[in-house]
Each structure stands twice: as structure tokens, then as C-alpha cells.
Length: 164
Ligand SMILES: [Fe+2]
Image (tube, rainbow, N blue to C red; front, side, top):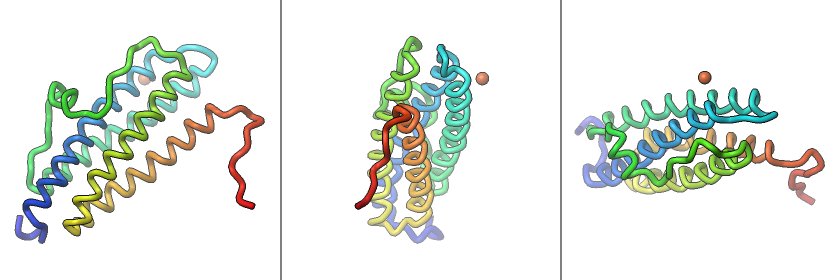
């Protein structure tokens, strides 16, 4: 891995955290499929489509994280039994209401954003710009989706914060 110009021990620290993030994204992906299939009620069409858009995005990121780990010359975790053990996220039941689904996802986003920070910290120590850049983009994407889900929960009379 000489061409990478990265410290081996520091890279191991980053890879450990990337593998946990990979596990998080797998659990999150399947949860979105669960919600896409099991959503009922008047918001069916909007959320059914939104969850599909979100799991398609998660699918791309799953592959990018695994391939980043390989680029760092390590092996990504590949089995679901390992993902369930490693992940910070818990699976969800198939009987949640639309609002419970959105609340669950917002909570998971907070957990995943914290995990991304745990990836960035050792990557910064290692001047691993490739990982920092990739995860930085993921943070912005997840924050944006969180804003949208949170806006969906607001009443039409609710206001955004204003700076005086
Ligand atoms: Fe579908």
C-alpha cells in the first residue's frame, strides 16, 4: 500500500470505523425497503417513492464504502450476520405508522452521522483526503435528507428559524 502514502496503523483505525459504517448502511438500506413495502395511509405515494429514492442512494454508498475499504487495502465485512453484530442501528418492525417510520429514520440519521464523525477523526489524523472527501459528501447528503424528513413532519403553520 506504499503508493497510498498512508500510515498503516492509522489506516486500520479508519477501516474499523468504515466497516461499522458499512454495517449501518446495510441495516439502513433494508429498513428503507421494509418501509417502502409496508407504508400505508394517505402519505403512501409520497413516502413509498421517497423511501425508494433513499434506498437506491444507500445502495450506491454501500458499494462505495466497501470499495474504499478495498482501496485502503483491507477486506470489507460482507455478511449480514456480521452487519447485524457490528451496526449501531437496530432493525425495525414492519408495522410502524408513517410518522414512526420518519422518526425512526431521523434517529438513525443522527446515529449514522455520529459514526461518520468516527470515520473522519482517524482519517484526518492520517491525512486520508480520499476518505475525508467521500464521507464529507455523505454527511451533507444525510443532513439534507434529514431536513426534508423533518420538514415533512412540520405543520404548514410551523416556521423556520430566522436570524435577527
Ligand atoms: Fe418498489
